[in-house]
Length: 294
Image 1 (cartoon, rainbow, N blue to C red):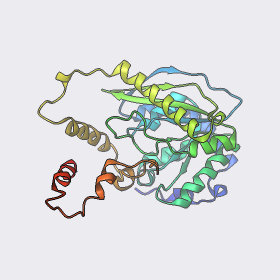
Image 2 (image 1 turned 60 degrees about the vertical axis):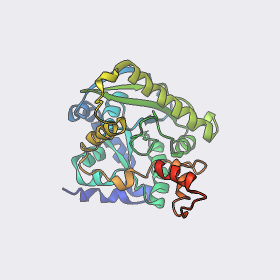
Image 3 (image 1 turned 180 degrees about the vertical axis):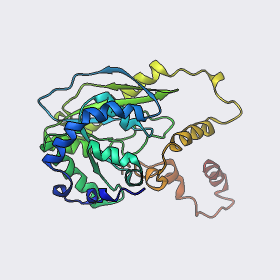
Image 4 (image 1 turned 30 degrees about the horizontal axis):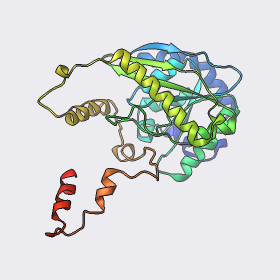
């Protein structure tokens, strides 16, 4: 299938994709979608705790991101209407997920297109100004790392919140077995802080929620691990089982669309400069060690 009738959402002009009438219609049908959403996923939902949201300010919900149906469970957890920023275009245009996201209210963004990324901010601002809340995954991609609870965040959430006087509400989802556990935390004024500080604070809040769910619901002993395989192999196998749930997973974009801090250098980049250095008797002692790390 190809959802050709949704091509209009690719326009970079907010007037072409967001309207007051469209938001009103989606607010009307949204209670039904919220009830149906968790039933279409593969996990049972358990909401551990849920903060009361203010009614006098727009809300931008900021969920953690790590598996296919975390949007469904986020929608069920917040129990509120909110347009979602949707960045997986193959999934949006080739599956029923795209149709259900459109019915909910979606702003699509081509993460490889600078103009599309820029336009998505204006679209989100228009949606809020017309009375909608937002769901925005600030990590930009699934967090597939072994050691980070939450990836570094894109600054767009801060910019949109500041421009629209919106509060930001952290959300965390975590799967263990056949259950998805979730928390909706208190909304806060992110723009009471400067951009860098506000994003660090939001990331810390999201990571704290994620840790809370992991500590409460996920317990594993060393004996539970497969000692015949390396931990790296076991982690990659787990990630691959999650990816297999997505019919149109774009490895090219998903592996590079995370936020990349220009002030940080990866280990690969550090040793990459030595790749073309000729091995000699004088430098062999050093270069052999770097090549072993690759």
